[in-house]
Image (cartoon, rainbow over all chains, first blue to last red; front, side):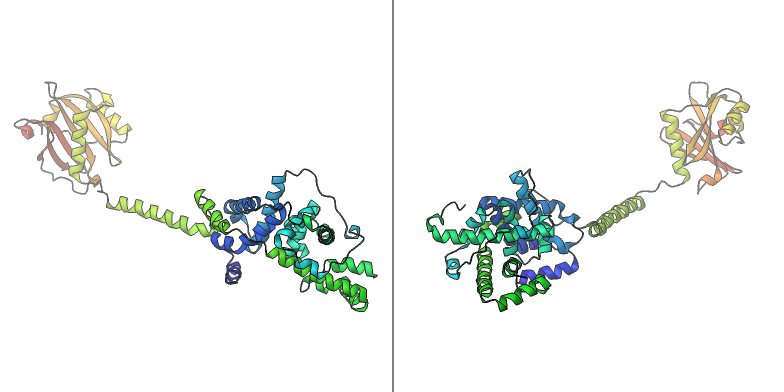
Length: 186
Length: 247
């Protein structure tokens, strides 16, 4: 919390040194990267690449209070670039989300750990994953998530809604097929 | 709003966020309070959201990551804390001022070429010894004066009687500290030259007296005097009776 207080102080001054910026955000960025890649090495690469971009271009940011959003956006760009995505995700309205919203009993959640959650997130449609990760990882508003991912607000909501719905389904299915729980985690 | 619609709204509900005050969310929350089945679903969903959020935040960050980030930035010699332009200005300004002051100090401390007569005399003699070039070659003093005058050099000089007996070979315009100098060349008759340099008296701060003074400069003997508004230097090979012979 001391670092956050320092961050707020520095935001007031409009400046922050590189090391303090790393201290404040590298953890959250790693978790976001891990949510996207589910690979420790890939996530580390993304975070390092993000801070390298900051080191070379961060000074161009006029409003330093947007440094955190800038870092998340940059990391997401780097992730997309690494995937060499050529197709754009379709815009989905929230009304198109899953028709059924099954109940997830609380005891099912007790058997989940972070690795398992990441594994399940990896099974969610790829276009939903970043929005869902930001939804759970940070206290960003939907508008802030839209800014980071550079997509419309409605698209953010639809992706989160559909992603959460898929995640709930996956948790339920996991309970019926526990043998799969330990597979495929980077 | 029906139950299904309320579920979709509450699916994105996060307590304590800006969305909480949204009218649609408020309506869905109200319905969840009134509809027991929706209420149970909502409670479970909140537990699900809380648990999922906690699990995401439990993702362990590798201990080496921070060090790697900082080390990478350093090893690649990036400017990781690059100040903004306005922050760099004082540094540049300080550097620029340092350079300016250094230059001023050098200029101030270096030996000043003074407008002393000795300096002028030495320059003329050294020039005559190294190489001199006449602008006009003639034994007609009138033409020499005209040529010097056209070049802005002193031309109304007085030639001492002794020099008038030597053969005039020509003349030229020289410069000393931006001041024009008239050079008049005489042939002593033995392939030795005698030079008369004429400068405005005001060009030197310590002009010689009206009475000629002898002074050896390098290989030449000089006689210096002031007459009128002109300062004269006669330079030639050292010989006995120099003054009596040429002045």
